[in-house]
Amino acid sequence: MARRSVLLLVAALIALAGTAMIVLYVQGIDARATKDQELVEVLVATETIETGESVSEAQEAGKIDTAEIRRADVVEGSLSSTSSISDLVAIGTIYSGEQLIAKKFGSLGDTQTLVIPDDMMAVSVELTDFERVAGFVNPGNEVAIFATALDPIRLLPDGKEQKLGSYTRIVLTRSLVLGVGTTSVTSRTTQAEDGGTETEEVARTILSVAVTQEQAEKLIQADRTSELNFALLTDDSASEDNEGAYLRDVYPELFRSPQP
Image (cartoon, rainbow, N blue to C red; front, side, top):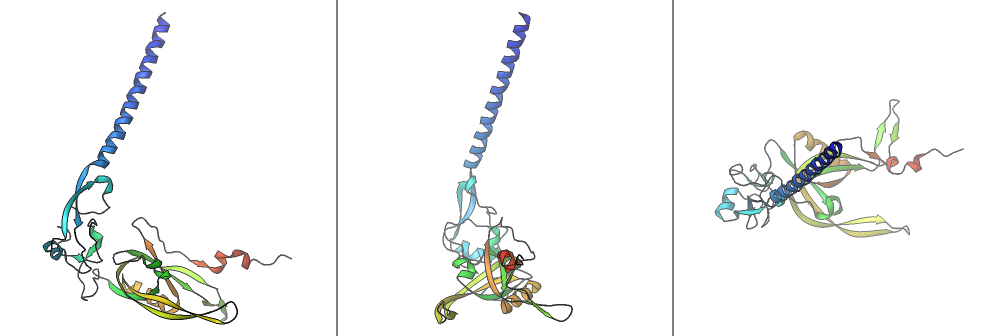
């Protein structure tokens, strides 16, 4: 009888502990959900803030105000006051309804057309819509820049030249886009399948990025000798300087020795 009573007591304690754990788990879910629904105050643009427009000018024009939004909707880096950006200007267009984040503001450079971060310089390249992510690259975005050399040649120790085939590698892992210029249309002639030629109209746009002197040298060299492509990045995008890819890395079967 005593043994049965002990077993019943143990079972009751286990059930009680299980119930307590479930209650605590549910309370944790409720707490996290409540936290996400909590309203916090952030700065938002009430009208479009143009590139180069100072924070003080935007405030005087009534373009900046506070708004209460759910914590779950707060953008990383959002500001709740202008104290840290009071002497800065917008480095890209900020549209009505956008939350204000610090990385979209910078110091006014020596030029009046671009806002250049301190200790950096601006370099411009001309790209087609395809090469600039179908036109989705805008001022304030960050990009990785790739270069493709169509037929690079390596000089061997014996003085002979070795053709390497098409080669693509990253030139700059992360660069800030300062400005997007006007788009012009140029003609490009290509070889048709029937042996003739085809001429097509290609839209090209000038984009300016912020770089150091060393980065500018690499970018200009790549622009003069290769074809460039911009890759649009997010804050979490991973872009690393690596060895790049040859044509044989894409089509290894074309470079295998024929079997006897």
